[in-house]
Length: 169
Image 1 (cartoon, rainbow, N blue to C red):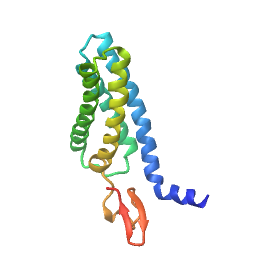
Image 2 (image 1 turned 45 degrees about the vertical axis):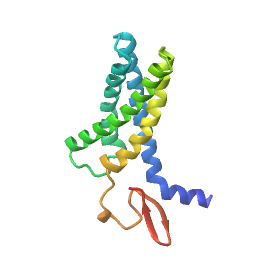
Image 3 (image 1 turned 180 degrees about the vertical axis):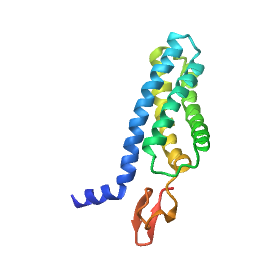
């Protein structure tokens, strides 16, 4: 029990960030699913264009949730800079989704609603989300500067040892 308690204390900030990121992501995911399918099947938009438009809608929702809730205690270098960086990194995540969708439709020849949603909205979003979480923490919502508190107490403290503290950023 002591080990679990010690692990929780050591990783509590990361656990809370992952939980908040997941909550924001789940909400944005619902927006993306609804918007993408509306573009595809309600408005007849081509598969890649519909994916781009649906993901763009979700990106706006995700930015607001992550900026003002998940990473609110991290450094904010200005709304315009953070927004541009966020959208740039989301473009990489979107590219991951598009490759998954393109491969499924163009290479495998699977172009039904289930195949599109699994490729772009499950596999693509899953892989893109791993990239997004890592990149948001590293570049968009950076940890407070090293002088903000005693060593080993910052939000990115991952592992302490005899040689000092190792930080994930």
